[in-house]
Image 1 (cartoon, rainbow, N blue to C red):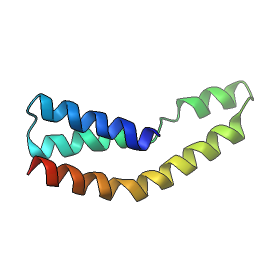
Image 2: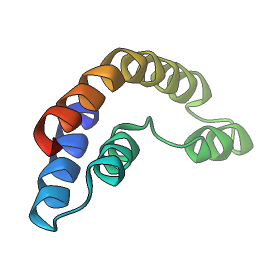
Image 3: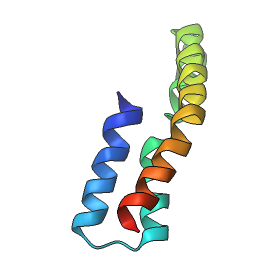
Length: 80
């Protein structure tokens, strides 16, 4: 859900504020990035949910690799 809603929100907000095409693409990709590693660091520190956090980060990273070209194409198409 994060890989769809966040970049879409960033695209809409960027268009509303008149962000340039290249900066809009960067903004959309920043919204589509997988979650940070802080959850894994905290989980490993307290030995809780380490495996779940690591696997969810891996899955979201692979999904980002699949959706990033789509968001680049879409933001180029819309921003022109």
